[in-house]
Image 1: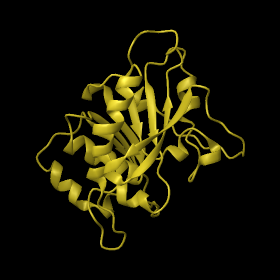
Image 2 (image 1 turned 90 degrees about the vertical axis):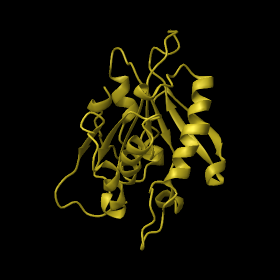
Image 3 (image 1 turned 30 degrees about the vertical axis):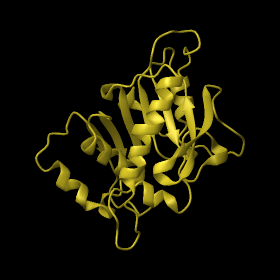
Length: 209
């Protein structure tokens, strides 16, 4: 399921969030802010006692609800709802405004700044993961903790899997803006990542961080 998620666009104005989606706000002291979190729970969550793997995504405003989108809704919740038996949860972290580039880039760029990616990932590892594992039946092991996103979200997902394999095991990354942080490729010069990362991009894509 992790590598089969499909991004679909929807362009009407009403809320499209699934009833399986819950939201909460949590402090992120590493970033001196608070983050709104959107958590999709599997359809059989309430009628089951089992624990679920999780997929982390970074641009929540595009994932579940047409009313909060920036680039078009990806309809993640509708896609997961379509499965008769859903074996995964999905968690999104809201990113809007000027801090988005800062938090989703591991290195600073001379034109676009940024470079606070490690602080952001520290928030996920030390605050957010702990919270959801204490309050929901979500598996904590790295082989059950995946990342999935595009653009800057793809960049930070790639970096997270390489830099912190003790926390994250796989990443699906699409149209990632690697050119803003070419330093990430130095981390994989002698690594085999073929089983950890799936990536895709189109030719002649325009810049859109």
